[in-house]
Length: 186
Image 1: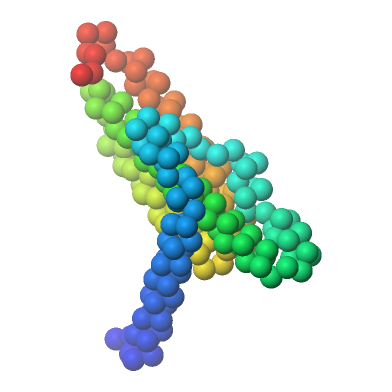
Image 2 (image 1 turned 90 degrees about the vertical axis):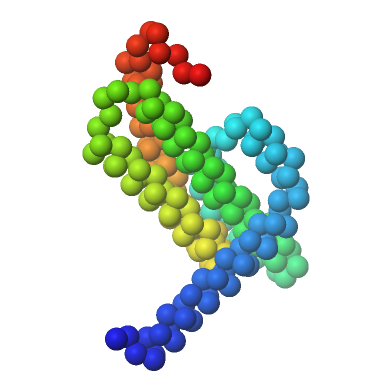
C-alpha cells in the first residue's frame, strides 16, 4: 500500500502534468491560427516532412534566449518565450504526424507482403510506440520547462526519428521490389 503521502505525491505530479499540458495546448492554440491554412493543406496533401537537425538545434538553442534576455525587455522576453514554445510544440506535432505517416506507409507496404516476420513487425511497432510516447513526453516537458532546456532531448529524438524513418523507407522499397508484377494495390 502506498499510503496517504504517496497518493498525495502522485496526485500532485498528475496535477502538474495536466497543468503543463493545458498550458502547452493554450500556447499551441495561439500559434495555430497563423498555421491553420498550412495545416489544412498538409492534411489534404499529406506532405509532412521531418525537420533537419540544424533547424531542431536552432529551435531548442539557448543562444537566442540569452540574446533576448540581454536586451532587458520583460515584454520581449515573454513574447519570445511564448512564440518559441509555440514553435517547439508545433515541431512536436509535425514530428508526430511524420511518424504516423511513415508508419501508415509501412503498413500499406506490409499488406502486400506474404512473408511477414512477426518479430520484425513487433519491433517496428514498438519503435513506433516509443516515438509517439517520446513526442508526448516532449510536448509536456516543453510546456513545463520551455524548449531551451530540452535541446539535447530534442536532438536525440530527431536523430532517432530520422533513423527509424530511413529504415522504414528502406523496408518499403524492399517490399515493393519483392511484390509480384500482377498484384497492384487498389
